[in-house]
Length: 357
Image 1 (cartoon, rainbow, N blue to C red):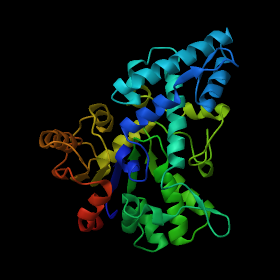
Image 2 (image 1 turned 180 degrees about the horizontal axis):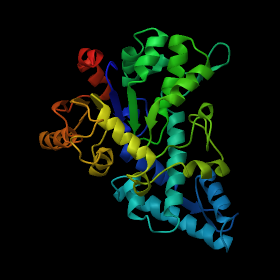
Image 3 (image 1 turned 90 degrees about the vertical axis):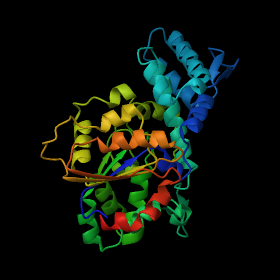
Image 4 (image 1 turned 45 degrees about the horizontal axis):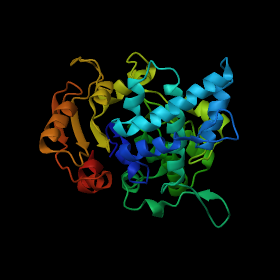
C-alpha cells in the first residue's frame, strides 16, 4: 500500500469502531446536552442543563445588548434544537435548515463540541497512564479495529521508507473528532521509537483535510483553538472551539484552498478507500472536482474500495455509480458491493490487494 497515491475518505463509521457515536446516537447526545431545565437560583430561571454550555452562553451573551435578552434567546434556541433533533437526519442537516436563524449556529456547535470531546474521552483511544505515569495510548484496546490493520500496512518498512510512503497518502475526514491524527501521533512514537516532537512534525505535515472542521487542534499541533483529546473544557474554552466547526454551508465553498486541495487529492489518487462513509449527495458533490477529463492531475487508473454496510442492493448500485464517476479517467475498478463489511473487515478482505497497491 502507498506505492501509488492513496486516499482515505473517513466518515462517522470509521470513528465508530473505536467508540464514537454514529448519527442517531450523536443526535441524542446533543439533544440531551442542550436540554433546558429550571434553576431558580439564576436569571433567567430556565438554563441549559449542561453546565459548560450554559457557561459558554453566558460568555457569548456578554457581547450583546441587552445581555439578558440575548442570553434568554440562546437558552430558548438550545431548547428548540434539543426538541427538534430527533426529527432531523443529522445535526448538520438541522443547522443547515436554520442557517439564517440567529443563535442556532452557535448553540448547535456548542453541543457538537461538548459531545464530541466527551465521546473522545470515553473511546478506546482515551489515553491511559503507563508505569512511569506518562500518558499513553494502549493499542491493545484497538485490536479488531481498522486503525491497527491500517497501521500494519503502513508500518511494514524502516522509518525512512515509511516517511517516503507516507508522502503518497492523503486523508479526507468528514468527522469533527481528531481520532486519526491522535492515532498517528501516538502510533509513530510507539512503533518507531521517535520523540513526541518528531512524531508531531510528521503528522502536522501530512495531507489531512477536515472540510467541516474539528473540535479544535490537539495541543501538540499548535495554532488556533486547542483542546486535549477527550478534554472536559470549561465554557469559556468551548466558544473558540465551536468556531472551529463548519456547517454544510461554510464547508462547501468550492473556491476555498482546502476544497481545491481535496479535489487535487481525489484526482491524483490511484487507490481510494471509503471507510464508514455515508455517500450523502452533499458530501459526494463536495468531493467531486470540476468535470475535466483532460486535467493533468487525473490518475489514469482508479481503484475504489469502500464500506457500504447495511445498504440495499439498489442503493449500492447508486453509490457505486456516484463513486465511479467522481473523476473522469481511463480505467476504473470498484469494490463497493459487500454490505456486510465493517471498516476493519475491509482491510482483512482486501489485505493483499491493498498491500500491493
